[in-house]
Length: 243
Image (cartoon, rainbow, N blue to C red; front, side):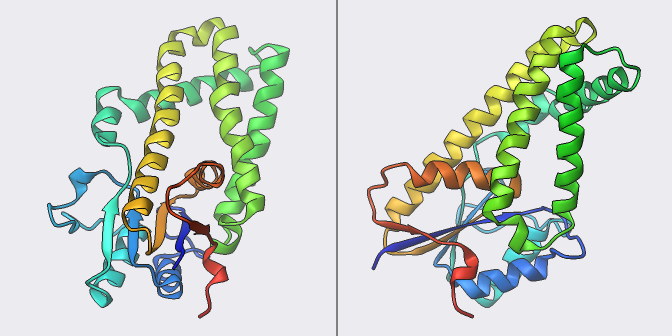
């Protein structure tokens, strides 16, 4: 039996066209032996039970319901250890919001350079398109079209904003944080991939589903396509499975 691996991109909180019920239906459709979950080990007990269920999380709600029906299914965390601790230590989200707010203010007041304005014009266009995607269902969120789009958008967010910060005196105070943000994104992606490979090799005859925010799906999927995994693995989309 060849191991099968599916990466399911989620949007974290329910919206009209993509809810926890959709994730539950997909889990039943894929019928995995193991679920890899976008958390670190601190969110689980020693026997891999959720310490707490976040009822605002579409993934928590769906997976906990699925495990009630299938209690023997393995669930494992695959995120970087200490993720939330890191966020707290560097005031990650507060600083990210501060940069974004200051950047938008300078853009609206036309204080940015011509090149910076071009980057911002593109980012605003991409952000609008991403919001449109977030209003669709799991099919489009997990499409190759969205994967290609989000790759470009994330690159623009990380490298484009970095370029604006470097060339805008009012924003240079944020250079250190943005370097930390870029570095952590890349490090986290590498760790996620390493952990996925570790579990696929360990459970090399199993069907595995990776449940992860849709912004990560493309980078994980693309890199896994070109990595030599010890086991023979068939990377499949959820809709390829029969009902």
